[in-house]
Length: 480
Image (cartoon, rainbow, N blue to C red; front, side):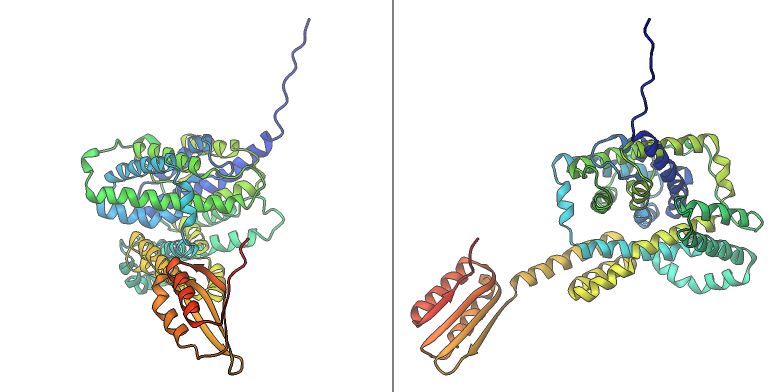
């Protein structure tokens, strides 16, 4: 008679379960807060979080990244809804997802890594600034205005409301309390528990006694809407492209950052892009928010000790179970508390330390960053990002075309000519003018070791000049 023994759980199982609970506790308030900030029902944010766990979590690409609604897309979603309406959101997200799948299958995922870091930082900083600006309004019990200009114009009235009304004072109090608790919790011995969760619980408990607007979450099936293809037009097609590019860039930049946090398998960028596309396609079919890989959730996943992709799948399971069994719990959370969480997320996107470090090391790169962020605030995300990319290309072209020629006299019979930079045909007239102006002497040494690129036109011109001049020593770079 044989006895049957139970197979022990793999050594990664329980660490992944624990990490999934941590990620769930971080993701839940952010899913709701991002949806509210985007101007859509809170349930749509939770649907995107569930799809990010149950669909993208199962697909190959990245092991530790966690996907869901992203604070970085909040501004883009709000602007898109204002222009095309909420019914068009599902169609736009569906189209963006299909574009991402195509980009991944065409193996274009790795090219997103070639975008200038200054443009990326500028994009995130601009989004962060607009996000922070908009989320100040729930502190005063007000709905945020539709445009950035209106948000700036309404600040004076917001301050007056926040300081003179019961709703404003209450919202300001619980908002500040949320930020303070989240900041202090990181310095306690119990920081393994997410500070966001502790801050939400404490501030919501205090807010239960105050007159504050709150969120409401109903059944997920109430907000699912079928895609309306009749809304397709040129503007919607443009929005699809914008969503696809911005979401792809944010996901793959997040992947590069997350890969530096752990020693496990590296992200396969093309497969990750396909996985994100599949997730957004499903979200589009359900009429939900677009998704990206989210650095806050992903970092929490790594810090909590996740070993495999099981942790991100389970976090989607917990989101679904919670919203099905306990949706009423979220009705105790004031909008000001969620706004505080998004203010914190927007502040992280600003990344002032990185901006200052870039400004000290590379002023031209910092100028591209400021231009990108400023135009995003003043116009919109697409305009600012495209302008930043154009500025980065122009800066690179300028750097690539820079050439300096220095002539130094060592007595009357010896001159040293040092050429530095990129010698291309664009710089040929100035190069020849400088060489031909070198005084007559018995010996001229032309040092080309500082030339990073010497094209055929400049190379032939220097050789011809040296042959005509005579007594010229050419020092070329040593080839490997």
